[in-house]
Length: 477
Image 1 (cartoon, rainbow, N blue to C red):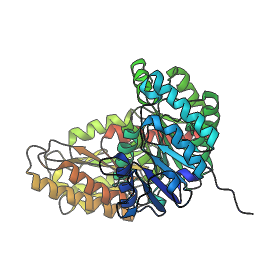
Image 2: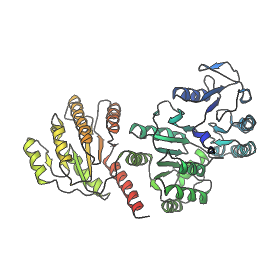
Image 3: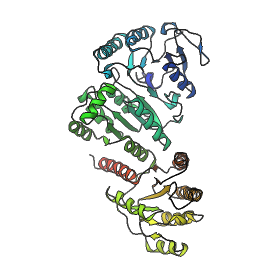
Image 4: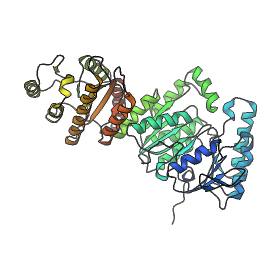
């Protein structure tokens, strides 16, 4: 017996897509171009009032003119026309309408609220499911469906539910740059028809998704949200950032997606009961996702820190210690072997943390790091840290060469050990292209399975968060 297709498969894996407003200068053309350039594998139908041809595709003047029913429609028409358009889609056999258009309940006007109720009524009467309004819709790399052209085409195991369009772009882009790959992302806006609970239930059944991230500003049904979230958390890590938890933030959320935020204490208790992981910023969310996705789970909290810069290693020790990690002493045999091999450079510290000084990251970096990492079982996790940019007293070309030597050594060490390793790139004062250099390092390291972080504090907090999650799971909490 053929398994029935889940209704939300038409959101994430449509076999045919129509785009309204697909004409020069209109938002529909932006979505159509993204779908084409992202390699969407299904059929594409541009719709505009003039017909003709758009992006090499035959354009149709209305939804009724399409030669067949389509699974998914991206709707970029004026808000007042949306309810009747949804009814037309229902008559045509369309499964899902994603409404990019804004100007509904989030506008805070009586007219906007009335129009959104009309959308809800039209969806119910026509049998069409509605994503949004006020959203960007889905990104599913498996089928080449994306609302930007620079998201990776490779699939992964992370799903991201995001009530904000802008946050869905920036967070997905940053996580992807650091090696995370997604099964599905959805920017879902006001959630007037398909809401956060529907997505959670879908992801609970989704074998392609192992980790779930959520940015949420408000929920439609608190008790159902708690039930569905708790059920999902029993099977998969769920990382949540709540926007609008302060009074001022709640007011901003209401004008952004029309969300009503309740008591933050109540929400915090609900998330803890459900077993979700709450984070305080998008940066922390990305750090936690990177840790879940790329870092093999350390078996304990014994730490070794290796890098260049005495002051930064002291601060690093503080960051990790305050998050529950401890640094055992470097074994005397290893310390002595390194001491015989390294000249007495200023700032050299052969304890734990180990400060090899900048000069140890020259041609012999591989030897030093291999000795430190592969010859000892005194630590469960090794942290490499590297300043990035000009230190102020070493020329930039020298710094770049040292960094390149260090990265090559990290990659060689990673290929020789199963011990969890991570890299923290610390931004120094820089007169050269910091972002371009970081992107290159991140690509090389994440491809080898080394997660990259941009601060010691962020790395320490994220690894602690993930370890506490697994500790609770082992204890049945």
